[in-house]
Length: 346
Ligand code: 5AD
Figure 1 (cartoon, protein in one colour):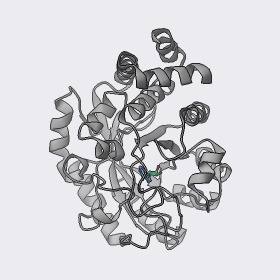
Figure 2 (cartoon, helix red, strand yellow):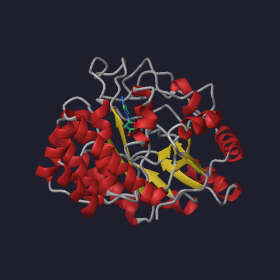
Figure 3 (cartoon, helix red, strand yellow):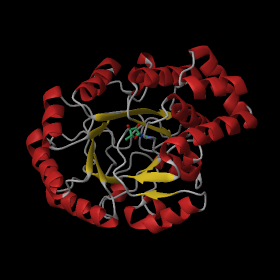
Figure 4 (tube, helix red, strand yellow):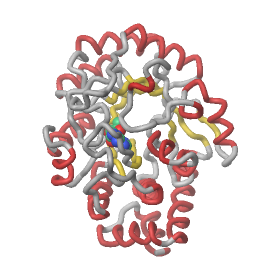
């Protein structure tokens, strides 16, 4: 496997058969996983040194008209507690975040029909005016090209829209009432064409996913060449149809992050909240697999528990914006530090 890892690190691509071999070996052979991760870490250090970018995550609304089988915010979950932040609350989050040192705000939300362009654009304009040196990242799901353009003109710079699954059948099985994989990809490409820095990605270990599907995801990521890639383990939420399914595997997640780093050396790759939720050491293990971004929670503390996309989602301590000193300590312990710059893609 050493040759395959070296080839991947050198050429930033690998054919599907070799990739499947590598991923399979990485989860069955500790030495392969170790070599894959250390090679990914070396690649990340060449690009970013030992700095980890931080992004302040603001969860605007837990209302969602989607019905994704895995997600606790799905519209069929009648148990979910719903909330919606006011524009003033969102601006307060930004003010607090800016004071703490954040220079990227991520506005993430369920697909809430009340979030029209008319509602969103003044908020984005305001953030852009108040914090001209901060990046604004949106994660608001599937919208029209016109909408994406208006939000960009209002001042947004980046957009996160995970593709969730590059295999059409798997995608359809997870999103039975959605608009389909083609439409999702169309949205991501539209965002790229409009000049956003774009993030895609997928969960690891969601029901029905096999290694061959992950290879399709990795080939899709290679072809899309996004600026950001979010990868985390599936974690069951009890009030969803997948509530009794097992969570995704830690080692498979780490191996997939490491391969993604080698495919896209410059990409911004978060060590995700799902990874930190799966394991107490998940966040540092993500960094020690080539991730270089952490997204602490900046949402008002009284709504954090309600943005429950999965069970026991980490939103406190080192996952919280007010826990930055704890995060700094955790990073120092593995020889890293917080990089407070905006952290754009280069
Ligand atoms: N487990 C892990 N990740 C999830 N997401 C949604 N539900 C879950 C879950 N149960 C991920 C999706 C979505 C992102 C915001 O969170 O990939 O794009």
